[in-house]
Image 1 (cartoon, one colour):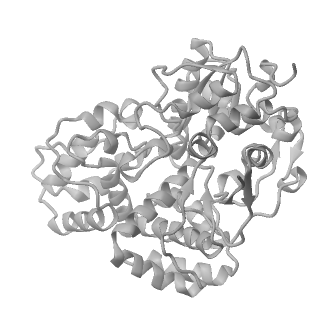
Image 2 (image 1 turned 45 degrees about the horizontal axis):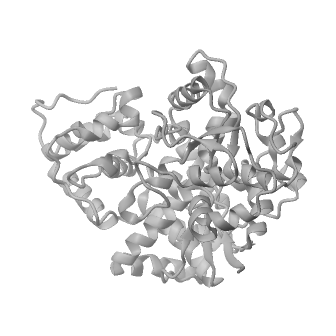
Length: 292
Length: 175
């Protein structure tokens, strides 16, 4: 059964983290997902929460209203966006007063927020809505022999009161997806829930890189074949900034970092070039995937 | 980066204390302020390990009403917003949300916004996104633009002037 979603790109993915967008657009249609490009989206507001939370709320409501106008549910591949949109839906659902205030302002853009849009991220879309059985049916080149560590991203799993795609202390959906693709994982490693530091890149970049470096160093020492993530902010830290992050922990880091959707595509037999693998700056060539 | 000792003789600022409570109750209806100083938040704090942020002490200062001390401190800007403190608090207190409120108040009072926050704000105001389209390099050093990769145009506000007007209005509103 075909299911339609508005692809809510956010800012980081469509302006810089192209590999995520390319691999999403390439691999999800195989699973019966129709991604609709909708005109009118803006930033979700999450990166501005420290500056003005009301602005964050407004921006999220406006994006949800854009999706509503198009009568579509939202697929938000970025963990930050997914949190901002979910928090907004939660708050405006509980506060008619705030909803009215926001709607008064949205009317100038001919938008109205009702709260009817459903919001998914990559992890729950694949695991809960498409399902492991369907994924399994499409695996042509299983990722046999490779063992991956996962990184969910803080914003994706917390705070659980508002409903998040996976468990806040013991997320396992990515592990289950990776196993379905034929790869090995581990339920837990001590640094699994550690933050990438991405937000601090805005005002304390050295500390941000140290966070990134510490986690990658541990993953390298444990001997994983690579790290898998689903958030463009986290991926930017682990992949593009890996060499610099290594300097903060005095280690030469060589951890291949993949978007989950890139591995999904490889397991489906899609060619590397079509999954944006040339854009990963970490040494993904270290492991020979999808060549058998 | 440190803030005043808890035994400071500073005068409590009840007006700001009320503002924080207002912000929290209007924006975060599912949290409480029944902190009993167990410090579980601090034990799991991502910024504590690296930058000495101690969320439970922020809550103690909040209870004492020593808000200016926190607003004037760089410490509030060390939070990585990992939400572990909020997730793990046995009392449903959310230090991360208190810190967001404090940072918002620091900005509203005209204090200098650290790092690239101003640039991000300006970018969202002018183009609707935190940054414009970037050129990237491949592993073998080739430059690529979005248009080279067969990706469609980026979605953006249909009427930028109206979008900006709405955002400017909300920017000056009180919570």
